[in-house]
Image 1 (spheres, chains in turn green, brown, yellow):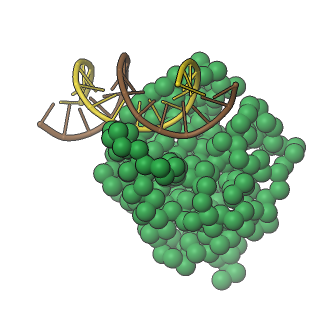
Image 2 (cartoon, chains in turn purple, blue, red):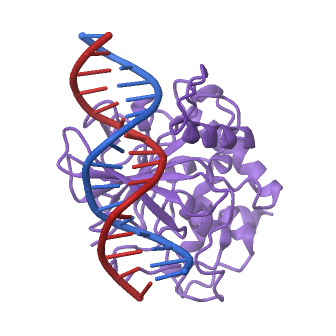
Length: 310
DNA sequence: CGTGTTTGACCCGCGC
DNA sequence: GCGCGGGTCAAACACG
C-alpha cells in the first residue's frame, strides 16, 4: 500500500493544477493554486510552509520568488485535472504510478504574507468564540493546504504533534472529519483530516496556518538513517503533512515511500522549488547513488543539476 | 499525573 | 430571521 499525496485547492477558488506534484518514489500531486486572489498573492511557498524564519534566507528567498511565479504560470492541465466534486477541485492522477488525487489549497485571501498579526488574529478569533463580544471584523483564515493521501490511516505522521480537538460528521460523506491542532503552545497551526467521499482510501489532510517552530518530533537523526536527515525536507514535508520517514509509523509499514522527484508541477521547466526540498528523499530511494554529494541544506533546496552548475 | 481522545454543546457564517 | 453546516470548546474519559 502506497501513500499518495497531493495538495488540493481548498474552497476551489481556482482550478490550476500541479498534476505531477510528486511522482516516482513518492507520488504526490498537488496544486498550489493561488488563483482568485492568488496571482497577486505574494505569499511565498516557503512562507506558506512556515519556514521563513527557520532557515537561511537566500535559499528560501529564491524559492519564494520562483514558486509563486510557477504557480501563477502553471496552466490548468485539462488532461489530468478532473473536477470530481465541487467546490473542491481534485486532480486525477496523470501517471500510472501516481494515483494520488490532489489539488492545492490556499485560502490566503490577502496578498500579504502571513505575519504575527495574523497569528494574533487567529488567537483572537478562537477566543472570540468564548466571548459574546463580537467584532465587526470578518474572520480571516490562514492559508490552507490540503493533501490527498492514499492511506489506510487517517492521521499521518508528519513530524509534528497534534491534538485532536474535534470531530464532525461531514455532509454528503460517510466519514467524519477530524480537527487537529498543533500541540505547541505558540503554534496555531491546525489541520483537518477527512476521507475523500469519492474514494475512501484517500485521506484529505488540510493544513491551516504555519508552524512557528521546528518539528518537535525526533531531532535530526544521523546521516544515513532511515529517517529524514534534513531539517528542511522534514519540516517542509511535515508542514504540509507529508509523511516522512522520521517517524516510521508502525501502523504504516511500507505505505510511506520516500518522495523524490517531487512537486514536479512546481518543477516543470524550472527545477527550482519546493520539490527540491524533497530531493533529499531520493537518497533513500536510491541509497547507492553516489551522484548525490552531501551539500547540506542546500541539497535539500537545490536540485542536483543546479548544484552542479554552481 | 500528563497527555491525548471523545463527544455533546455552542458559536459563527452563509444562503434562503 | 431562520436553519443548516462547518468549526471550536471543554468536560469527561482513556491511557501510559
